[in-house]
Length: 609
Image 1 (tube, helix red, strand yellow):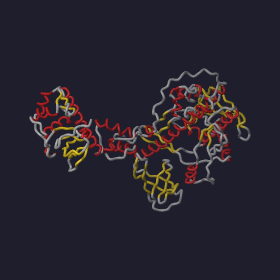
Image 2 (tube, helix red, strand yellow):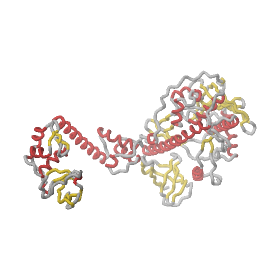
Image 3 (cartoon, helix red, strand yellow):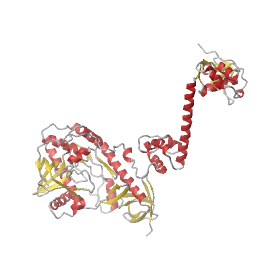
Image 4 (cartoon, rainbow, N blue to C red):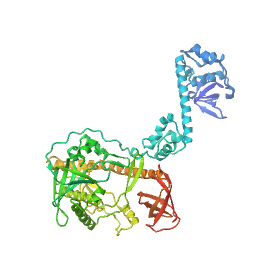
């Protein structure tokens, strides 16, 4: 049944606002909703507040009345708009009807509809007042907080608000009411900038692992004791684990045994079999995360303590005994589980012992293997490298010297990777082979820094597959990464396959392997990207800690009127307008102007010579 139209000149409620009925035409009524505009609406679209007559909405002036007495008389009951108006204002007119309705919409003493108004109890009123006071106090606190932010500061009580900005800066959310209130774009960079401006964060806060969703704690997984496998005793060999100073996860060592090269690798698969809890966690992490301020391992710390070569007097290993023919080719590979006695050396310490056994023989092999790879077309990219570390809040940047000891270890690991790859191919053992396509451009001889930089841009990323394809960058026709199972998950997978094969147990099939490859590749790319961003972050913090820094930059690329320079001492790239056309590889003296840490941007100026 259609609703009966309200009387002409009556007061009605339309979309929560007062309106006056002007006329009725057919099934619609015409109302004056204020502002000089007449609207045609259906009777059901309005609610009758008073029959009228109401000559003008301007007559709905506020009316004084005894509201609290009316509430006290009616407390806990139900009433109507007419009864409430008469009690509160002693008369029921359009003006008092509207005033009474405003009391209802205010919600302190009354609530409901014109026909059924609930009168709140004293307890309800007290609670509503408490909530309103709390809301008003919170609004005042919010406005004070925003005011302080605009002044570039915050107070202790503001930290609860800033958690929202922190979450945005860490990539944990993509919006922020605070950033909108301040008129700033809701990006992680802008959120980081705000936290730095007000002092909630300082430069030593590295946001990039959190933005990538990478864990910063070691896995907490209890491991079983190392199985008492039968192992070949190789403790009589002088086994050397050579690594950077401060390395905490030694997983490879070298020995020389009367013409045989031994490459010993931490026997991680002995403790972490496929699909064990630690294996699943390592798969989810893909690799160790190396940050200047810390190393986050993919395996529980107990695994490194038990398996790291040289961390115990005797270490368990999976050892590769490699025999070479006169041409430097692998003529035989023996793979054994072993016990080794390992001494740890830094690259610098090893460099001083290259004239002594076994480093002398290992260096000779390394030189021969590097020569063979170069003859096979390996691509050597010789760009400056630095080590960025954070020690007690201070950033230390140390250039990595070109050492024979580094080449020695690298060539031994590549030789082991080639030998393992051929062994697996010959024994029909599925493993993830590593390959790299050759650049499409024809390469000329590369000598200068700018040419090295250009060459690096041409290199394609390496790939893992079940098919052994050439690795153009290394100059190897077959290669598998198998020497860092403490640090890289796919190396651990190779070890799991080798151990099962040697024991005559069932190995993972190709599908299971490629599932692991796919999972690890996606995450490891994010790990490596985060490491690069973290190194850039701390390099800029170093510049902040060293205001007025100046040094040499080398022009490596040109962008119109701007030049890209590489600062070798920092391994930092920056762009600058020099104002003159200098050739590539020109050296330019630079002085730091400023740093934009959230954007990882630097501004240098040229020092006149």
